[in-house]
Length: 496
Ligand SMILES: [Zn+2]
Image 1: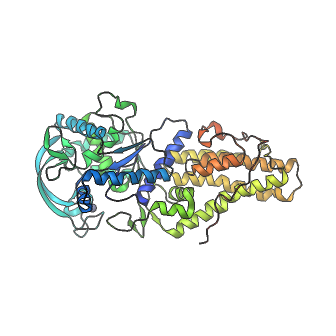
Image 2: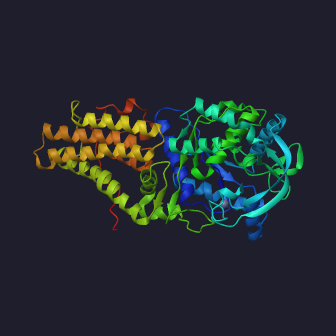
Image 3: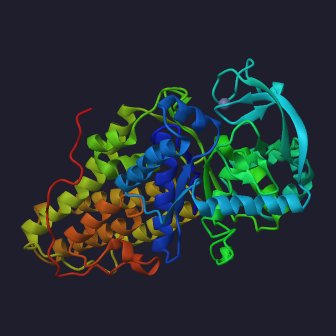
């Protein structure tokens, strides 16, 4: 599983956090399924923008990237991202992989020298044709493009149209969600232009192995990180141990490069294609993409102070269907926190612990094997699983939260707090504890720390992350007789 590598010309912002948290939760979900997952993220450190930013800061490009890259790894540590590998494109293993891929494509005859001219957005590092520009401006950044003319090596992407369409026809669910996949197919059907892969005008990059007067430009450099992380280009490693990737998680703005350029590059080099792409929309702020150039950045770590780490992770995962654009507002963040976490999950955990304390002496009773909640739990498990399989975390959490609502309703129907202690009260609370056990497992990819706290408060031993699906979510496994701990409020309400 991979995130894009993030460009180090700016510090991590909400857009970076969005994709990375989704990758983390998806990784944790697959680990619950017992899959052996390697989750890779990293930083993109070459190119003109970095050279310019380093100049402006009075540093060498290497010093500059050394100062920014750790801000990303620290941000991911604070967001509890379970990554296994953090690759920087300035590492020797990456340089080796880029040179290996370039050489293979060159040997295949798909890289050739040519003169190029065109309109170029420095922020995108991408040429645009006149019909792609909006009012003469870059369609992504809405800023002026520059006219460039230079001798470059080109990758003959135009030769790959039929091969790409054939491959995608044979792998119709490789790109998720479907509407984003259709955009990529539309780009391929619309005709493919060769793209420039080298520059002589800068030297902050990977030299072409057959012509070191050129450095690799942008996409042959950046995209190859995915292979570099598997040991491609290292004669002592078998890169196919971890390649092909199961999922590239990307944003819609880099669809063309990931779903058109990248598979063509791999075909040329004789390397297997990734098994899947999960294409997200943008998390917008005030209707615009968050980026340094548009100036509307939100610092994700600042939001943790207000809603807690899991409150923030939950919002990012739950608020926007993956693939669609989301609009970040502070009011939306607090509203969802109060509704789903404070009033629903937090309230359920507190209520169950309180009534177990009063009516059952603080010891958790056994669930009823024939409880009406058992069916709701089975539905939640099945639906949560389906939606994670489709890389739809918001729908997966909605399915999990249905079980929280059903459990709250079950308590309200039976009102155990009004009844005398005895078998009837025990059965209702045993059911609620069993539902919480299953909820903790299902919610753990999204809110790992909170799920572990719930697990411990209801008296379950060990780590919730060590549970394995589907066996751990069948009804009736709550360890009755365990102490149930009340504890502080998991999600105190925030005044809005
Ligand atoms: Zn641009």
